[in-house]
Image 1 (cartoon, rainbow, N blue to C red):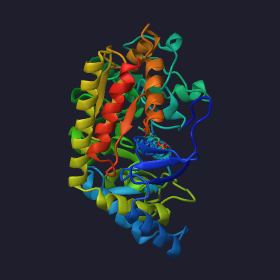
Image 2 (cartoon, rainbow, N blue to C red):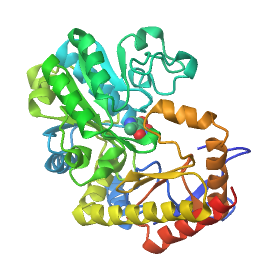
Image 3 (tube, protein in one colour):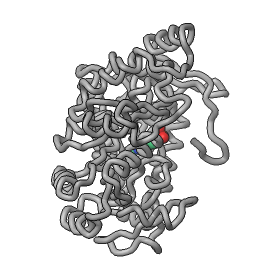
Length: 410
Ligand code: PMP
């Protein structure tokens, strides 16, 4: 994370708190972009890591912990029967996309305009296109990300967010070449904007009708519930890309799905149609940390996190009302977004438009971010909060009070 003139440098963390190089203590509402669902240095996770480090750091063979973590995930996510571990959400998305291509023998991947899915090349198309390259709102252009080629963009079909009718039309136009559709049920970088059930249902129907695979990017949105985002939204994917919370704070990614797809692609006894090499794949350190973290992340933990999230959302809405400034609060479960605009952010284009309006959304977000920073809290820019089980109700209330003071300065 960078902010001018230079960011604070972290030295130490414990529970909900972090300390910087100047010795200042803050409540961490970013939690390493969601990965630290139990906050910093949870004793059980630290103990699991130390024990693992003393036993086996890294190895070129499978371990039983890898099976245990895969079984734990498979026991929770309705569509996941088998799992392949890698080292980041970016890799998870990369392999889910490769899996869809290898399984179908087709090239094209559909995604939602403005949705972030990590740094893999295909996934980088249509994430932050400039208005001059938008194309029509009902048929967005495939704009390559910086550092990508037009060739990459040519294999990506961009869908307007939550637009059932146009999405269906676009997918049908590419049906013969369509390998997969990737969607995040709760789009983080659009302010935890939920994909509507009707939209997900349409994607499911079109994937089925065309023989393409539906991929959920649950790298962030697995936080929606004990059974993952797919359990929360009810419409089921074929493949799931995972990351962050399944690694207990260590680097992680994973692709999961039903055996009929996973085994056909990855099982060496069946020829492993899709190579999945990786020096640190399923490394025992991450497996040990992930197991400890997920074992503690039971239904009760999800329920408590959701209550904390509801408390924060309600408090921030009240703060906006009292301060009488434009804004909106979005999000679900342990994920909270504070927008500084009255405009409904329903698409990436709404967000770009809001940034360009006379009430400078970006500037307000920065002011609030710095107010929090100077008053004992680290929040995400622009204005998001990701909770951990280490956070207390009092800390949430402190955040709400601080938000009110910050909003009053605008
Ligand atoms: N997909 C989504 C939805 C994400 O939010 C992220 C990371 N924020 C990624 C993929 C990429 O994960 P990683 O940073 O672990 O590569």
